[in-house]
Amino acid sequence: MNKMIIGLTTLCAVSLSSLAAESPVLRFGTDPTYPPYEYKLADGTLTGLDIAVGKAICERAQVQCEWVETGFDGLIPGLQAKKFDAILSSMAPNAQRQKVMDFTQSLYQDDTRLISAKATPLASTAQALNGKNVGVLQGSVQAKYAIEQWRKQGVNVVEYPDQENIYADLANGRLDATLVVATAGQAGFLAKPAGETFAFSGDAVKDPVLSSTSAIGLRKGDAQTQQKIDSAVSQLKQDGTIATLEKQFLGKL
Image 1: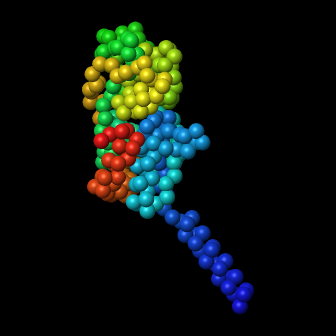
Image 2 (image 1 turned 135 degrees about the vertical axis):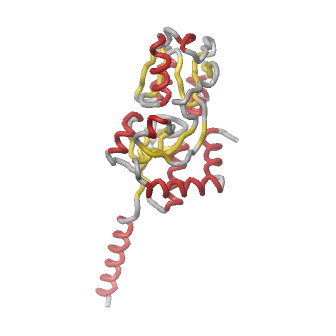
Image 3 (image 1 turned 90 degrees about the vertical axis):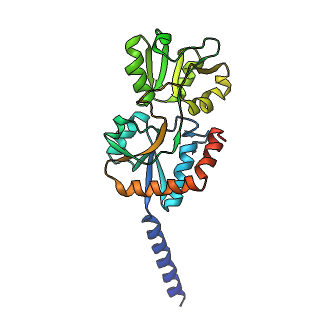
């Protein structure tokens, strides 16, 4: 009898283990160097608005979340190489990206702003920035805009693999300004001690390449993943979860 019980217990454990192993997994690619959207705590734990939203999506879709970290400019190639199923990393669904990938419905909206020292405010125009060093995140829409619209007019546009290094060089005087998503610049730099002598400069930069929305990127034609994520996002918008998380990480009311 004891042997039978032990045998059944072992069989149940194996079955449960097999079921767990077969649970659907949703793999998100992200660049965790862009607070408050995605970044790491001192112990290496991933956090931020996009991370929290991703976890909520997985919970609603009843799948396991996995995070694959890569540099921002490697996210689209990584998606196409099937290293992950979707990109959740504060990515704007502009026309150029829509040619090579699909996007879910939008998650949030924001402006693109220039940050410079309070003592030397700068207008967000090529004329005002002529001869200045402006840091941008490599692979971002801000980098694309600055390179195409400002570099040819004498602005020294410097690309960086992560936004944290841009803030560091701005604080120590190696850069005159950075072009960044407004809420990321506020929470990731201006609200911190290193950014206390800096501020947004000039008007918000408006251009078709600078999409004001953020969405989740998908491989072309992956309708199953898109339907799964869009359904979860709709629920999270309707019940106020995304609004609550925006308030938590961005301070929005």
